[in-house]
Length: 155
Ligand SMILES: Cc1cc2nc3c(=O)[nH]c(=O)nc-3n(C[C@H](O)[C@H](O)[C@H](O)COP(=O)(O)O)c2cc1C
Image 1 (cartoon, rainbow, N blue to C red):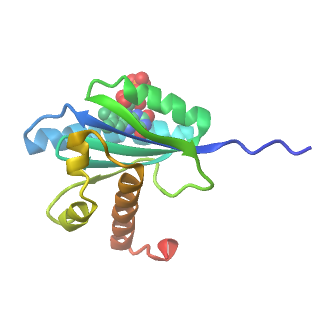
Image 2 (cartoon, protein in one colour):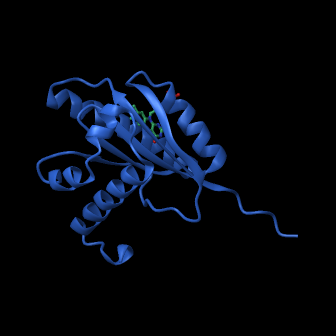
């Protein structure tokens, strides 16, 4: 008999970042998280997308169940953010994110996309919806891919 394929899941959480207020230090801190996460996620065959709006972070982590759980346990213990809350944890049919770790930080260029998603009031109330986080991340990924001339994967 063929062995059962390993279970693919995604986990979506949100948290409050403990990052510096000044832009250069903040960018450096996000860069440091990115370096660590890319390396570890590549090794664990995790794909993920991190959305950052003001001091809120929301991340989607995709991969094999045990790898996602291990990764989330590490992230959950990281003092660079607090109030980490799982929004959704479920089995998925296929991966939707292509990079081991990519970020979408709200800025003047993507402001309209963030505004349309309107997550901030929900972050502030502590009730963001998984579907809202997921669709914003998908749009930010598609825009970033499109800038790199990679449109055909996302039709
Ligand atoms: C907002 C945020 C997102 C993170 N995302 C990841 C991630 O996707 N994968 C990962 O391995 N580490 C991620 N990290 C870093 C981990 O929390 C941890 O520092 C890193 O995995 C190194 O863990 P270790 O020191 O126990 O080896 C993230 C940290 C923060 C603050």
